Length: 189
Image (cartoon, rainbow, N blue to C red):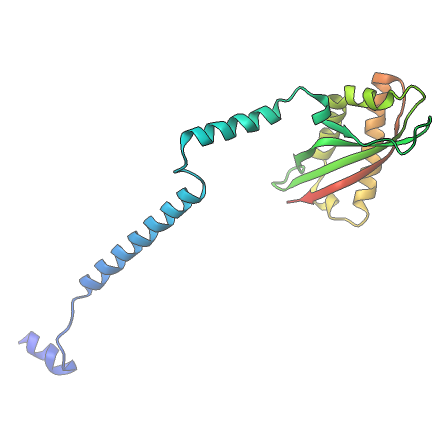
């Protein structure tokens, strides 16, 4: 009698909701499987292992290069006489976390020096690139997120980094060779 009452009220027999729920669950699983497969394909999970191993070897080779020219690159002097201006770019870029934050600071630094009579300042700076780079990273890692967002901060930071580089060079070479410091890239993420 209860079946008769259900058909009499609505005019059609009631369908079971279990069929709808089953179809929705199956559809959700198919969509989820497609998303997982697409993600694995996009990140190269299905690429051949030889390609992945060669890519890893190439990245490791570039990170462990012993050639100082890969770390510090110099442009040609703007003049051939003593006192010519030479620009050097510290490579690779400097990347560090901001103090007590999950945000990152990534910068590229270029410096200007006045070359001496013997044209040896560039080589001296290249020779001491590692302690210079270490000191710059130490300073950058002490910066807070609220400092980086203030107006005029880049100029203040450039002056601070210039002094720090000159301090390291004076300690190691006896001279303060950096005339100017420039940011060629400044990214806060």
